[in-house]
Image (cartoon, rainbow, N blue to C red; front, side, top):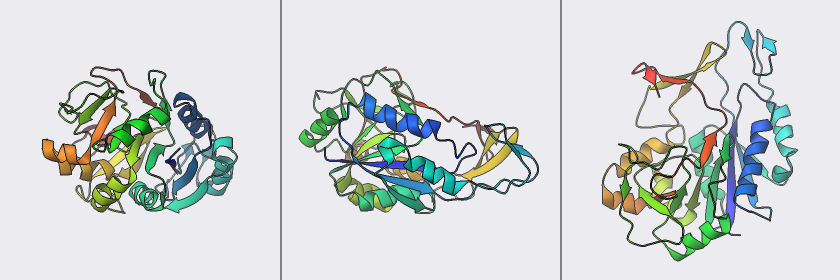
Length: 274
């Protein structure tokens, strides 16, 4: 199959445990009925966790006063996952950096962008092979996005009339995301790649989010992949069609993915939940 997996991970407070990482890759292979080992790159964001002062209790209930990231143990554990054992391991400095490196390194026609904390649901009824066939037949479909939301119109998730009837239900959208998605690589190199800032979001300098973990706040800056792409298309239908992002499924379809590591995130600039 002409697809490469970009498996994106980073150092979180529950490593070196790899339960969610293992469930993600197994879910991907099972739901999409993949019977071969696909070329895989693991991109690990090395950005250090913020300085943690005082006592912190991790998800495994271990307590530390001077927490040190068990990065090497985590990396070795990832390599022990059967579906990742042949993957190339690449360290990156941000999610954006990994996204661009994945596009650079991909030698197949398509790239599946897969962060480490998603589970695919059984209401995905088409195989990866079938999705690739649809993209092979329809050059305007440059990106198929799987939705953590229902396929209902929202201010940031609008739908446009398809010019064709596809064999698989797809909705043309202005929504852009680094959530699980299948990319056409040559289009991504030409259109998406130049828009992404390696070090993170270039549209929101100074914005900072906080993730509440065990009653402690861990800062994290805006990731940037969605921001630049959403800014490009806005509600301009011509630009939406140029990007060619389609959400999988029919209108009003329930979510097709769930986030296994959801965080309680607050945008400090507005002091509200994000």
